[in-house]
Image 1 (tube, rainbow, N blue to C red):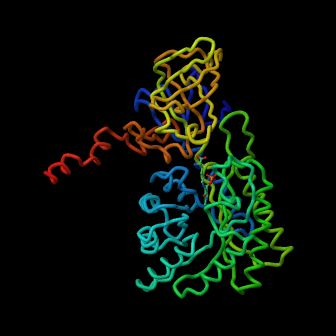
Image 2: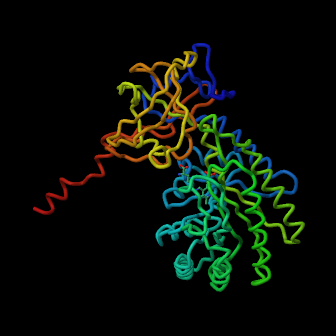
Image 3: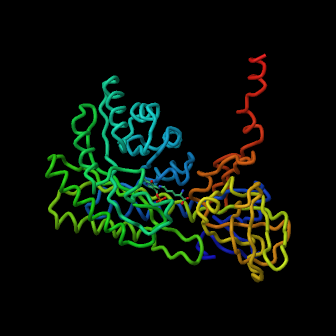
Length: 440
Ligand code: LLP
Protein backbone atom coordinates (compact mmCIF):
# COMPACT_ATOMS: atom_id res chain seq x y z
CA UNK A 1 0.00 0.00 0.00
CA UNK A 2 1.23 3.43 -0.96
CA UNK A 3 0.78 5.57 2.16
CA UNK A 4 -0.19 9.22 1.91
CA UNK A 5 -0.93 11.90 4.49
CA UNK A 6 -4.56 10.81 4.82
CA UNK A 7 -4.17 7.06 4.23
CA UNK A 8 -1.62 5.58 6.58
CA UNK A 9 -0.82 2.97 9.16
CA UNK A 10 -1.30 4.36 12.67
CA UNK A 11 0.51 3.60 15.91
CA UNK A 12 -1.77 0.66 16.62
CA UNK A 13 -0.84 -0.95 13.31
CA UNK A 14 -4.33 -0.18 11.96
CA UNK A 15 -5.23 1.38 8.65
CA UNK A 16 -6.21 5.02 9.10
CA UNK A 17 -8.05 7.16 6.56
CA UNK A 18 -8.82 10.87 6.94
CA UNK A 19 -7.54 10.71 10.50
CA UNK A 20 -10.00 7.92 11.42
CA UNK A 21 -8.95 4.46 12.54
CA UNK A 22 -10.71 1.99 10.23
CA UNK A 23 -11.24 -0.42 13.15
CA UNK A 24 -13.25 2.31 14.89
CA UNK A 25 -15.15 3.11 11.68
CA UNK A 26 -16.14 -0.54 11.27
CA UNK A 27 -17.26 -0.70 14.90
CA UNK A 28 -19.30 2.49 14.56
CA UNK A 29 -20.90 1.97 11.15
CA UNK A 30 -20.61 -1.78 10.51
CA UNK A 31 -19.44 -3.48 7.35
CA UNK A 32 -19.49 -3.55 4.39
CA UNK A 33 -18.82 0.18 4.36
CA UNK A 34 -17.63 2.60 1.70
CA UNK A 35 -15.32 5.25 3.16
CA UNK A 36 -14.40 8.43 1.26
CA UNK A 37 -11.47 10.71 2.12
CA UNK A 38 -12.61 14.31 1.67
CA UNK A 39 -9.14 15.85 1.87
CA UNK A 40 -7.89 13.68 -0.99
CA UNK A 41 -10.86 14.58 -3.21
CA UNK A 42 -10.30 18.26 -2.52
CA UNK A 43 -6.57 18.02 -3.18
CA UNK A 44 -7.01 16.44 -6.61
CA UNK A 45 -9.90 18.74 -7.55
CA UNK A 46 -7.97 21.85 -6.48
CA UNK A 47 -4.88 20.72 -8.40
CA UNK A 48 -6.97 20.42 -11.55
CA UNK A 49 -8.71 23.76 -11.10
CA UNK A 50 -5.40 25.55 -10.54
CA UNK A 51 -4.02 24.37 -13.88
CA UNK A 52 -7.20 25.10 -15.78
CA UNK A 53 -7.48 28.64 -14.49
CA UNK A 54 -3.78 29.55 -14.46
CA UNK A 55 -2.33 31.90 -17.09
CA UNK A 56 -4.99 33.04 -19.51
CA UNK A 57 -6.96 29.83 -19.03
CA UNK A 58 -10.65 30.02 -18.34
CA UNK A 59 -11.12 26.27 -18.69
CA UNK A 60 -13.46 24.20 -16.58
CA UNK A 61 -13.09 20.84 -14.89
CA UNK A 62 -16.37 18.95 -14.69
CA UNK A 63 -16.57 15.99 -12.34
CA UNK A 64 -17.85 12.96 -14.23
CA UNK A 65 -20.85 11.98 -12.11
CA UNK A 66 -20.92 8.36 -13.24
CA UNK A 67 -17.85 7.68 -11.08
CA UNK A 68 -19.65 8.56 -7.85
CA UNK A 69 -22.95 10.42 -7.88
CA UNK A 70 -24.05 11.47 -4.40
CA UNK A 71 -25.05 14.92 -3.17
CA UNK A 72 -21.94 15.43 -1.04
CA UNK A 73 -19.55 15.09 -3.97
CA UNK A 74 -21.26 17.92 -5.86
CA UNK A 75 -21.03 20.17 -2.83
CA UNK A 76 -17.30 19.42 -2.53
CA UNK A 77 -16.68 19.79 -6.26
CA UNK A 78 -18.60 23.06 -6.44
CA UNK A 79 -16.59 24.54 -3.59
CA UNK A 80 -13.38 23.59 -5.45
CA UNK A 81 -14.58 25.41 -8.59
CA UNK A 82 -15.70 22.38 -10.58
CA UNK A 83 -18.76 21.78 -12.71
CA UNK A 84 -20.07 18.33 -13.52
CA UNK A 85 -21.24 16.08 -16.30
CA UNK A 86 -24.36 13.97 -15.86
CA UNK A 87 -25.77 11.10 -17.91
CA UNK A 88 -29.23 10.56 -16.52
CA UNK A 89 -32.18 12.42 -15.09
CA UNK A 90 -31.37 11.27 -11.58
CA UNK A 91 -27.68 12.20 -11.82
CA UNK A 92 -28.89 15.66 -12.91
CA UNK A 93 -31.31 16.02 -9.99
CA UNK A 94 -28.71 14.71 -7.52
CA UNK A 95 -26.19 17.25 -8.82
CA UNK A 96 -28.69 20.11 -8.52
CA UNK A 97 -29.75 18.96 -5.05
CA UNK A 98 -26.08 18.78 -4.07
CA UNK A 99 -25.82 22.47 -4.96
CA UNK A 100 -24.12 22.23 -8.35
CA UNK A 101 -24.86 25.24 -10.56
CA UNK A 102 -27.01 24.28 -13.54
CA UNK A 103 -24.88 26.44 -15.81
CA UNK A 104 -21.86 24.27 -15.04
CA UNK A 105 -23.62 21.02 -15.95
CA UNK A 106 -23.20 19.12 -19.24
CA UNK A 107 -25.80 16.48 -20.05
CA UNK A 108 -24.41 13.38 -21.80
CA UNK A 109 -25.71 10.06 -23.05
CA UNK A 110 -26.09 8.12 -26.27
CA UNK A 111 -29.83 7.59 -25.74
CA UNK A 112 -31.30 10.25 -23.50
CA UNK A 113 -35.04 9.92 -23.12
CA UNK A 114 -37.41 12.76 -24.07
CA UNK A 115 -38.24 13.02 -20.35
CA UNK A 116 -34.55 13.44 -19.44
CA UNK A 117 -34.01 15.99 -22.20
CA UNK A 118 -37.02 17.97 -21.01
CA UNK A 119 -35.64 17.87 -17.45
CA UNK A 120 -32.28 19.16 -18.68
CA UNK A 121 -33.86 21.98 -20.68
CA UNK A 122 -36.26 22.94 -17.87
CA UNK A 123 -33.45 23.08 -15.33
CA UNK A 124 -31.25 25.21 -17.58
CA UNK A 125 -28.15 23.02 -17.91
CA UNK A 126 -25.23 24.75 -19.57
CA UNK A 127 -25.28 22.40 -22.55
CA UNK A 128 -26.53 19.09 -23.85
CA UNK A 129 -23.93 16.93 -25.56
CA UNK A 130 -25.88 15.53 -28.51
CA UNK A 131 -25.13 12.02 -29.66
CA UNK A 132 -27.71 11.14 -32.34
CA UNK A 133 -29.87 12.68 -35.06
CA UNK A 134 -32.94 11.38 -33.21
CA UNK A 135 -31.89 13.35 -30.13
CA UNK A 136 -31.57 16.54 -32.20
CA UNK A 137 -35.16 16.08 -33.39
CA UNK A 138 -36.43 15.60 -29.84
CA UNK A 139 -34.51 18.63 -28.49
CA UNK A 140 -35.69 20.84 -31.35
CA UNK A 141 -39.33 19.92 -30.83
CA UNK A 142 -39.15 20.27 -27.02
CA UNK A 143 -37.51 23.70 -27.30
CA UNK A 144 -39.88 24.84 -30.03
CA UNK A 145 -42.91 24.01 -27.91
CA UNK A 146 -41.52 25.69 -24.79
CA UNK A 147 -40.05 28.66 -26.68
CA UNK A 148 -36.55 27.97 -25.35
CA UNK A 149 -33.17 27.72 -27.04
CA UNK A 150 -30.56 25.28 -25.79
CA UNK A 151 -26.81 25.16 -26.31
CA UNK A 152 -25.31 21.91 -27.54
CA UNK A 153 -21.95 20.29 -28.05
CA UNK A 154 -21.74 17.52 -30.61
CA UNK A 155 -20.08 14.33 -29.39
CA UNK A 156 -17.59 13.16 -31.99
CA UNK A 157 -15.47 10.06 -32.33
CA UNK A 158 -11.90 10.94 -33.25
CA UNK A 159 -11.06 7.22 -33.57
CA UNK A 160 -8.23 7.02 -31.06
CA UNK A 161 -7.23 3.59 -29.77
CA UNK A 162 -6.37 4.33 -26.15
CA UNK A 163 -4.95 0.87 -25.34
CA UNK A 164 -7.24 0.15 -22.47
CA UNK A 165 -9.63 -2.68 -21.58
CA UNK A 166 -11.82 -3.13 -24.65
CA UNK A 167 -15.03 -2.81 -22.60
CA UNK A 168 -14.19 0.71 -21.55
CA UNK A 169 -12.86 2.09 -24.78
CA UNK A 170 -15.38 4.45 -26.22
CA UNK A 171 -13.94 5.80 -29.43
CA UNK A 172 -13.11 2.80 -31.50
CA UNK A 173 -14.64 3.01 -34.94
CA UNK A 174 -17.43 0.64 -33.88
CA UNK A 175 -18.28 2.60 -30.73
CA UNK A 176 -21.90 3.35 -29.82
CA UNK A 177 -20.78 6.82 -28.74
CA UNK A 178 -20.36 9.90 -30.90
CA UNK A 179 -20.41 10.74 -34.60
CA UNK A 180 -17.37 9.54 -36.49
CA UNK A 181 -15.08 12.19 -37.95
CA UNK A 182 -13.55 9.67 -40.36
CA UNK A 183 -16.75 8.71 -42.19
CA UNK A 184 -18.11 12.26 -42.42
CA UNK A 185 -21.04 11.77 -40.00
CA UNK A 186 -19.60 14.24 -37.50
CA UNK A 187 -19.61 17.18 -39.91
CA UNK A 188 -23.05 16.13 -41.14
CA UNK A 189 -24.28 16.20 -37.51
CA UNK A 190 -22.94 19.71 -36.99
CA UNK A 191 -24.57 20.94 -40.20
CA UNK A 192 -27.82 19.37 -39.05
CA UNK A 193 -27.62 21.08 -35.64
CA UNK A 194 -26.93 24.42 -37.31
CA UNK A 195 -30.17 24.21 -39.27
CA UNK A 196 -32.34 23.92 -36.18
CA UNK A 197 -33.62 27.28 -34.93
CA UNK A 198 -33.91 26.27 -31.26
CA UNK A 199 -30.48 24.68 -30.94
CA UNK A 200 -27.27 26.66 -30.66
CA UNK A 201 -24.06 24.87 -31.61
CA UNK A 202 -21.27 25.84 -29.22
CA UNK A 203 -18.70 23.09 -29.46
CA UNK A 204 -17.49 19.53 -29.76
CA UNK A 205 -16.83 16.76 -27.30
CA UNK A 206 -14.89 13.51 -27.23
CA UNK A 207 -13.91 10.95 -24.60
CA UNK A 208 -11.29 8.44 -25.67
CA UNK A 209 -11.54 5.87 -22.86
CA UNK A 210 -10.85 5.31 -19.20
CA UNK A 211 -7.97 4.25 -16.92
CA UNK A 212 -5.42 5.51 -19.45
CA UNK A 213 -1.83 5.98 -18.27
CA UNK A 214 -0.08 7.47 -21.29
CA UNK A 215 -0.23 11.08 -22.47
CA UNK A 216 0.07 10.18 -26.14
CA UNK A 217 -3.59 9.21 -26.79
CA UNK A 218 -4.78 12.46 -25.21
CA UNK A 219 -2.32 14.52 -27.28
CA UNK A 220 -3.34 12.68 -30.41
CA UNK A 221 -7.00 13.35 -29.59
CA UNK A 222 -6.27 17.09 -29.24
CA UNK A 223 -4.56 16.98 -32.67
CA UNK A 224 -7.58 15.31 -34.25
CA UNK A 225 -10.11 17.55 -32.54
CA UNK A 226 -8.31 20.74 -33.53
CA UNK A 227 -8.03 19.46 -37.12
CA UNK A 228 -11.77 18.95 -36.97
CA UNK A 229 -12.27 22.50 -35.69
CA UNK A 230 -10.56 23.65 -38.90
CA UNK A 231 -12.88 21.45 -40.97
CA UNK A 232 -15.92 22.90 -39.21
CA UNK A 233 -14.72 26.43 -39.88
CA UNK A 234 -14.05 25.69 -43.54
CA UNK A 235 -17.25 23.80 -44.24
CA UNK A 236 -19.75 25.70 -42.11
CA UNK A 237 -18.15 28.94 -40.90
CA UNK A 238 -19.35 28.01 -37.39
CA UNK A 239 -17.31 28.97 -34.35
CA UNK A 240 -16.25 26.25 -31.91
CA UNK A 241 -16.45 28.07 -28.59
CA UNK A 242 -15.94 24.98 -26.42
CA UNK A 243 -13.74 21.93 -26.74
CA UNK A 244 -14.62 19.20 -24.26
CA UNK A 245 -12.01 16.43 -24.15
CA UNK A 246 -13.75 14.11 -21.65
CA UNK A 247 -11.82 12.33 -18.90
CA UNK A 248 -9.97 9.02 -18.59
CA UNK A 249 -6.87 9.62 -16.44
CA UNK A 250 -5.64 6.46 -14.74
CA UNK A 251 -5.30 5.71 -11.04
CA UNK A 252 -3.40 3.15 -8.95
CA UNK A 253 -5.37 0.02 -8.08
CA UNK A 254 -2.33 -2.23 -7.55
CA UNK A 255 1.41 -1.68 -7.69
CA UNK A 256 1.32 -2.72 -11.38
CA UNK A 257 -0.44 0.56 -12.18
CA UNK A 258 1.84 3.50 -12.81
CA UNK A 259 -0.30 6.54 -13.57
CA UNK A 260 1.13 10.02 -13.81
CA UNK A 261 0.11 12.56 -11.19
CA UNK A 262 -3.51 13.61 -11.97
CA UNK A 263 -2.54 17.15 -12.93
CA UNK A 264 0.14 15.93 -15.38
CA UNK A 265 -2.58 14.79 -17.77
CA UNK A 266 -4.31 18.14 -17.68
CA UNK A 267 -1.03 20.02 -18.12
CA UNK A 268 -0.20 17.95 -21.21
CA UNK A 269 -3.63 18.52 -22.76
CA UNK A 270 -3.49 22.26 -22.11
CA UNK A 271 0.02 22.47 -23.60
CA UNK A 272 -0.96 20.46 -26.68
CA UNK A 273 -4.04 22.59 -27.24
CA UNK A 274 -2.01 25.80 -27.03
CA UNK A 275 0.48 24.38 -29.53
CA UNK A 276 -2.25 23.27 -31.97
CA UNK A 277 -4.00 26.61 -31.79
CA UNK A 278 -0.80 28.42 -32.73
CA UNK A 279 0.15 26.07 -35.53
CA UNK A 280 -3.34 25.77 -37.01
CA UNK A 281 -4.24 29.41 -36.40
CA UNK A 282 -7.62 28.71 -34.86
CA UNK A 283 -9.47 30.74 -32.30
CA UNK A 284 -8.86 29.27 -28.83
CA UNK A 285 -11.90 27.35 -27.61
CA UNK A 286 -12.73 27.11 -23.92
CA UNK A 287 -11.29 23.80 -22.72
CA UNK A 288 -13.53 21.51 -20.66
CA UNK A 289 -12.28 18.26 -19.08
CA UNK A 290 -14.32 15.60 -17.31
CA UNK A 291 -12.23 13.45 -14.98
CA UNK A 292 -14.15 11.09 -12.74
CA UNK A 293 -12.06 8.16 -11.55
CA UNK A 294 -8.97 10.25 -10.82
CA UNK A 295 -10.92 12.58 -8.48
CA UNK A 296 -12.65 9.96 -6.35
CA UNK A 297 -10.99 6.60 -7.11
CA UNK A 298 -8.08 6.62 -4.69
CA UNK A 299 -10.12 8.63 -2.17
CA UNK A 300 -12.25 5.57 -1.44
CA UNK A 301 -11.75 2.32 0.42
CA UNK A 302 -14.26 -0.39 1.29
CA UNK A 303 -14.27 -2.11 4.66
CA UNK A 304 -15.38 -5.72 5.08
CA UNK A 305 -15.51 -8.38 7.77
CA UNK A 306 -13.92 -11.71 6.95
CA UNK A 307 -16.35 -14.61 7.34
CA UNK A 308 -15.93 -18.10 5.92
CA UNK A 309 -12.44 -19.27 5.02
CA UNK A 310 -12.19 -22.32 2.80
CA UNK A 311 -9.10 -24.09 1.60
CA UNK A 312 -9.19 -26.36 -1.44
CA UNK A 313 -6.06 -28.30 -0.60
CA UNK A 314 -3.17 -27.66 -2.93
CA UNK A 315 -5.29 -25.44 -5.16
CA UNK A 316 -6.71 -22.33 -3.59
CA UNK A 317 -7.78 -20.61 -0.42
CA UNK A 318 -10.94 -18.54 -0.43
CA UNK A 319 -11.36 -15.81 2.14
CA UNK A 320 -14.98 -14.66 1.93
CA UNK A 321 -16.18 -11.26 3.06
CA UNK A 322 -19.58 -9.68 3.70
CA UNK A 323 -19.56 -7.72 0.41
CA UNK A 324 -19.18 -8.81 -3.19
CA UNK A 325 -20.25 -8.03 -6.72
CA UNK A 326 -23.40 -6.24 -5.50
CA UNK A 327 -21.24 -3.42 -4.08
CA UNK A 328 -18.16 -3.79 -6.33
CA UNK A 329 -18.96 -5.46 -9.66
CA UNK A 330 -15.66 -4.50 -11.30
CA UNK A 331 -13.94 -7.89 -11.04
CA UNK A 332 -17.04 -9.64 -12.35
CA UNK A 333 -17.32 -7.16 -15.22
CA UNK A 334 -13.72 -6.39 -16.15
CA UNK A 335 -11.56 -8.76 -14.10
CA UNK A 336 -10.39 -5.56 -12.45
CA UNK A 337 -7.51 -5.87 -10.01
CA UNK A 338 -7.48 -4.46 -6.48
CA UNK A 339 -5.26 -4.48 -3.43
CA UNK A 340 -6.66 -5.89 -0.18
CA UNK A 341 -5.20 -5.41 3.31
CA UNK A 342 -6.13 -6.64 6.76
CA UNK A 343 -6.93 -3.22 8.17
CA UNK A 344 -6.46 -4.15 11.82
CA UNK A 345 -3.18 -6.03 11.25
CA UNK A 346 -1.28 -3.79 8.86
CA UNK A 347 2.14 -4.64 10.26
CA UNK A 348 1.66 -8.43 10.23
CA UNK A 349 3.77 -10.27 7.72
CA UNK A 350 2.00 -11.22 4.47
CA UNK A 351 2.35 -14.98 4.42
CA UNK A 352 -0.33 -16.17 2.04
CA UNK A 353 -1.83 -15.65 -1.37
CA UNK A 354 -5.60 -16.03 -1.27
CA UNK A 355 -8.69 -15.19 -3.27
CA UNK A 356 -11.02 -12.72 -1.64
CA UNK A 357 -14.54 -13.78 -2.55
CA UNK A 358 -17.88 -12.06 -2.13
CA UNK A 359 -21.08 -13.52 -0.71
CA UNK A 360 -23.16 -13.62 -3.90
CA UNK A 361 -24.43 -16.80 -5.46
CA UNK A 362 -22.16 -16.58 -8.47
CA UNK A 363 -18.78 -18.27 -9.08
CA UNK A 364 -17.35 -15.08 -10.60
CA UNK A 365 -18.17 -13.08 -7.50
CA UNK A 366 -14.60 -12.19 -6.49
CA UNK A 367 -13.15 -8.97 -5.16
CA UNK A 368 -9.43 -9.69 -5.26
CA UNK A 369 -7.77 -12.68 -6.91
CA UNK A 370 -4.31 -13.58 -5.58
CA UNK A 371 -4.32 -11.15 -2.68
CA UNK A 372 -1.14 -11.23 -0.58
CA UNK A 373 -2.27 -11.16 3.06
CA UNK A 374 -1.28 -12.18 6.56
CA UNK A 375 -3.04 -15.44 7.48
CA UNK A 376 -6.65 -14.17 7.70
CA UNK A 377 -9.03 -15.24 10.48
CA UNK A 378 -12.81 -15.04 10.53
CA UNK A 379 -13.74 -11.72 12.10
CA UNK A 380 -10.71 -9.82 10.71
CA UNK A 381 -11.33 -6.42 9.22
CA UNK A 382 -10.38 -6.18 5.55
CA UNK A 383 -10.02 -3.09 3.40
CA UNK A 384 -9.99 -3.03 -0.37
CA UNK A 385 -8.27 0.09 -1.69
CA UNK A 386 -9.14 2.51 -4.52
CA UNK A 387 -12.85 1.78 -4.51
CA UNK A 388 -14.04 5.41 -4.66
CA UNK A 389 -14.94 5.33 -8.35
CA UNK A 390 -17.41 3.04 -10.12
CA UNK A 391 -18.17 1.00 -6.98
CA UNK A 392 -21.03 2.71 -5.14
CA UNK A 393 -22.21 4.12 -8.48
CA UNK A 394 -22.34 0.64 -10.02
CA UNK A 395 -23.76 -1.18 -7.01
CA UNK A 396 -26.91 -3.28 -7.29
CA UNK A 397 -29.24 -5.27 -5.07
CA UNK A 398 -28.16 -8.61 -6.53
CA UNK A 399 -29.32 -11.43 -4.23
CA UNK A 400 -31.37 -8.74 -2.44
CA UNK A 401 -28.26 -7.45 -0.71
CA UNK A 402 -28.61 -3.84 0.47
CA UNK A 403 -26.18 -1.29 -0.99
CA UNK A 404 -23.73 -0.36 1.80
CA UNK A 405 -23.69 3.14 3.24
CA UNK A 406 -21.03 5.74 2.43
CA UNK A 407 -19.14 7.58 5.16
CA UNK A 408 -17.09 10.72 4.53
CA UNK A 409 -13.99 11.16 6.68
CA UNK A 410 -11.87 14.24 7.26
CA UNK A 411 -9.53 15.37 9.99
CA UNK A 412 -10.48 12.57 12.38
CA UNK A 413 -14.23 13.12 11.91
CA UNK A 414 -16.66 10.86 10.11
CA UNK A 415 -20.31 10.93 9.11
CA UNK A 416 -22.72 9.27 6.72
CA UNK A 417 -23.14 10.89 3.33
CA UNK A 418 -25.31 7.99 2.21
CA UNK A 419 -27.31 6.12 4.84
CA UNK A 420 -27.50 2.32 4.89
CA UNK A 421 -30.10 0.81 2.63
CA UNK A 422 -32.40 -1.48 4.62
CA UNK A 423 -34.25 -4.69 3.76
CA UNK A 424 -37.41 -2.59 4.12
CA UNK A 425 -36.15 -0.10 1.48
CA UNK A 426 -35.67 -2.91 -0.98
CA UNK A 427 -38.91 -4.71 -0.22
CA UNK A 428 -41.00 -1.55 -0.21
CA UNK A 429 -40.71 -1.36 -4.02
CA UNK A 430 -42.28 -4.78 -4.24
CA UNK A 431 -46.05 -4.30 -4.56
CA UNK A 432 -47.21 -7.89 -4.97
CA UNK A 433 -49.90 -8.04 -2.24
CA UNK A 434 -51.69 -5.03 -3.79
CA UNK A 435 -51.36 -6.54 -7.23
CA UNK A 436 -52.86 -9.82 -6.12
CA UNK A 437 -55.79 -8.05 -4.42
CA UNK A 438 -56.47 -6.02 -7.56
CA UNK A 439 -56.66 -9.16 -9.63
CA UNK A 440 -58.96 -11.12 -7.38
N1 LLP B 1 -16.71 11.83 -19.72
C1 LLP B 1 -17.38 10.90 -20.46
C2 LLP B 1 -18.20 11.31 -21.58
C3 LLP B 1 -17.30 9.55 -20.11
O1 LLP B 1 -17.95 8.64 -20.83
C4 LLP B 1 -16.53 9.16 -18.99
C5 LLP B 1 -16.46 7.76 -18.58
C6 LLP B 1 -15.85 10.16 -18.25
C7 LLP B 1 -15.97 11.49 -18.67
C8 LLP B 1 -15.03 9.88 -17.02
O2 LLP B 1 -13.96 9.03 -17.25
P1 LLP B 1 -12.90 8.75 -16.07
O3 LLP B 1 -12.13 10.01 -15.86
O4 LLP B 1 -13.68 8.34 -14.86
O5 LLP B 1 -12.07 7.66 -16.61
N2 LLP B 1 -17.42 1.59 -15.38
C9 LLP B 1 -16.06 1.66 -15.91
C10 LLP B 1 -15.72 3.04 -16.38
C11 LLP B 1 -16.62 3.56 -17.48
C12 LLP B 1 -16.29 4.96 -17.85
C13 LLP B 1 -17.25 5.49 -18.85
N3 LLP B 1 -17.10 6.87 -19.18
C14 LLP B 1 -15.09 1.17 -14.84
O6 LLP B 1 -15.54 0.79 -13.77
O7 LLP B 1 -13.90 1.12 -15.08
